Length: 257
Image (cartoon, rainbow, N blue to C red):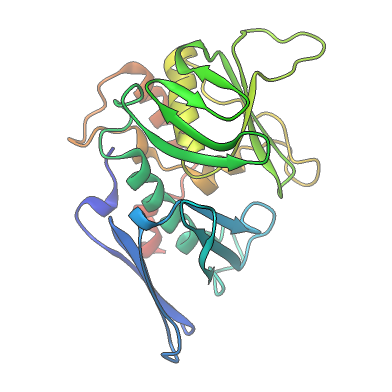
C-alpha cells in the first residue's frame, strides 16, 4: 500500500480546532485549548462515524477499543464548503486508520493478513485470518467469494457476500458484514482478484442516492491498491485502482482545496 502518510503528516486548521493525522495516529487540539486528544491507531479497535453516509457536514467519530468500549468522541468537518463531498478531515482519519490495519503489504497480503475488521450483532467480532473471513455464525474462504453487494440506507450499511456467481429468486447472502473503512477496500480487493468485477454498488439508498457509489468516495483511496514501492504488480490491482481513482477525493489532495 502506498499512502500520503508514508512520508508526511496532514494538518487541518479551522476556527475550532487543529487536526494532525499521520501514519501512527492523530492529534486534535481545540482552539480554546480545552480539548487535546492524541490517539495511536494501534490502540483503536474500531471507529464509528455517525452521520457520515447520510449527511454532508459535521460528523461525530466515536473511537472504540478492542473490547468495544468508547475511548473518546470528536466532531469533524464542521466548517466545510457547500459543494461536493465535505469529508476531508473524516476521510483522512479513516484512510490512515485503514492503512494501519491492512498494513503496508496490502493488497499483496490477503492470505497473510490477520486483523479485526468489524463488529456486528450477528457475527460479533469479525476477523480476517489465514485467508478466511471469520465471524461467530459464519466463515468464508476468501477464494470462494464470487459476488459482493453494497447495501445501504445511509444509516446502516452492509456488504452482502455470496459464494455463487448468479443469484436465485431468494438471493440470500452467505455472510453479511458492516461497511467500514477496512472492509470496503478489503472486499474490493478480494472481489476484484476473484472475478475482475469488484463490489456491486448499483443499489441506491432508497432516498436521494440512485446507487451506493458514494461509499467509494467516502471510504476508499486509490493508494490502497498500489504497492509500497509505488508499483501495481497485478492486473486486478490495476482494475481496482482505476475504479476508485475515477471518483476523485483523494486524501493527498485535501490540503490543496
